[in-house]
Length: 226
Image (cartoon, rainbow, N blue to C red; front, side, top):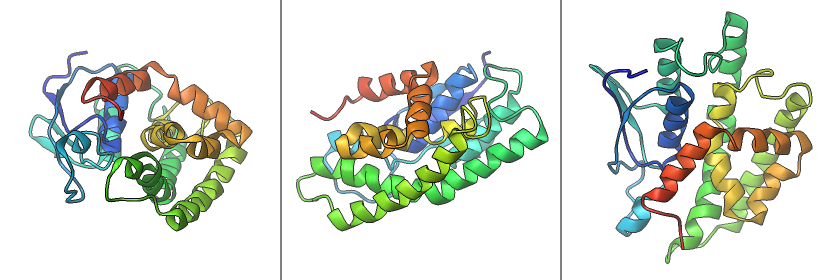
């Protein structure tokens, strides 16, 4: 469907932008991506690294509506276009939606902070001249993430996905940071492969067409680290 006037501002390398793009592809909605640089931190970085900054912000516009929170944008897309693309992305009933919301909150409150720190330390810091990975912070956040993934593993032993047997926003929301961590190093990868059910889950969600399209966009411009 050509949902008139859907615009996303930001760089695909940003985890927030990537989350929104994945949702748009799942919903099979047409949109315009305007590649601009907006940063949460005032990084004094070379331009070619700025374009790969995972902390860049997202802005979404639809008519006179503007939203800057990536999870809120995904909810908006699912409720505004319920009949398009993946119809079960935000659940089909109130119970399903409540479960998805619980996982979205867990991701935002307990998964996002340690995973964002590990994205920076494992995937980003090694490429900056004046920044060295901080071993103490890596270890501290690894432990936090391992604890969270332990909870996930238990749930995923009962269901294919976090909120049941369908892929939903609960799973989608985890993709951007997880991708960076898994692809950063063996150390990062092991966080997700060490737990059997988490490993199977990540394999399923990271090979979805919607996510593969986002990864392709991340590589196209401006390219990956050499």
